[in-house]
Amino acid sequence: MFSYRHAYHAGNHADVLKHTILISIVQYMAQKEVGFTVVDTHAGAGIYRLDSDAAELSKEADEGLRQLLKSAAAKGTELEEMLGEYIQELERFNPSGSLKIYPGSPMIAHDYLRRQDKLKLFELHPTDSRMLEKHIEQLRAGRQINCYKEDGFEGLKKLLPPPTRRGLVLMDPSYEMKSDYARVIGCIQDGLRRFVTGTFMIWYPVIARPEAHDLPRRLKALAQEVGKPWLHATLRIKSGQMGSQLDVLGTNNSPKRPGLAASGVFIINQPHTLKDQLKVSLPQMVDLMGQDALAGFTLESGV
Ligand code: SAM
Image (cartoon, rainbow, N blue to C red; front, side):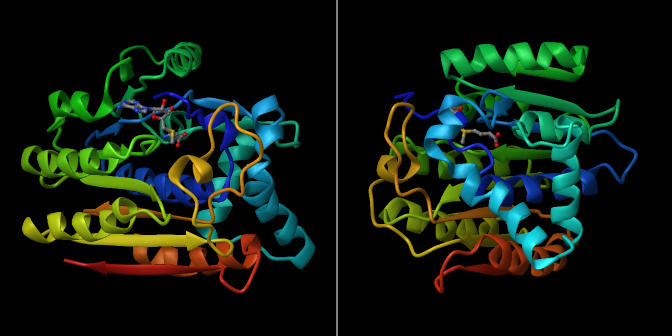
C-alpha cells in the first residue's frame, strides 16, 4: 500500500484526458447561480513539479502534455476549445512560459469555483496529504476547502448529498490494490442512493485486468438501474502492454516502465454539452499524442 505517488505520472496522457474533462464539468456547473460542491475522493498532493526527480525518471509528461504541445506546434494545429482551456489553466500556474508546475485536480477544480462553491478533498498518503494541506493553506480559501486525511471511499458518505443538492464527485483512485475496483462500484452505488442527481466522474486505467475491463460495464449498469444518463470516454495513445497494474502504473521507486497506454473516464449525470465537446477534443488528443496505429478513442453514452 502507498507505493503509488502521482508525482511520477503528473501531466501524462491520462491527466490530459481527466483534467480536460474535469474543467469542462466544473465550468458547466458554475453557469448556474446556486453553489455546488466538488468532492475529490483521491486528491493527491495538489501540485507537482515537472522537473522533479520523479517526473524526470518516469518521463510520462513527455508522452502526454509535452507531446500534445510539441505536436500542436509542429503541425501548426490550433487547440480546440476544451484542450485550449486546459492549456490556459496550466499557463496560469506557469506564468514564465516554461512548463514546470503541474496542478493536480484539487488546484484545477479550485480555480473554477466561485465564492458560493465548496471543495472537499480526501488524501490518505502521509506525505501527499501533508503536501496537499500545505498547498491548500497557501490558497487562503478558508472554509471553502476542507482537506481530510481519510479514506475517500468511506469519507464520501458523510458529504452526500451536499447542502445545495448540486455537486460533482471525482473518483480517481490509484488502483494500487485490486480491491479498489470493487470499492469504486460499492461507493458509486451508495453515492447514487444518497445523491441520485449528482455528477459522478470516475477515472480508470485501461489495462489487461478483468476488474479494469469490467469496471465501465458495471458503472453503466449502476447508471441504468437509477435511470440516469452516462458518458464513457477512453483514450489510447499507443499499443497496449499486458503488464500488471503496478508494472503499468509504476511505483515511487520503480525504474522506467513501459507506461500506461490507455485510460478511461466514466461520468454519470454528465453535462449535456460534454459529449459534443469530446467529439471534437478526443480526435485531437489522438492526433497530437498518438504514437502508433493503435492510438484511438471511444465515446459512448446512454440512459
Ligand atoms: N486526483 C489527483 C489528480 O488528478 O491530480 C490524482 C490522484 S492519484 C491518481 C490517487 C491518489 O489517491 C494518491 O495520491 C493516493 O495516495 C490516494 N489514495 C489511495 N487510496 C486512497 C483512499 N482510500 N482514500 C484517499 N486517498 C487515497
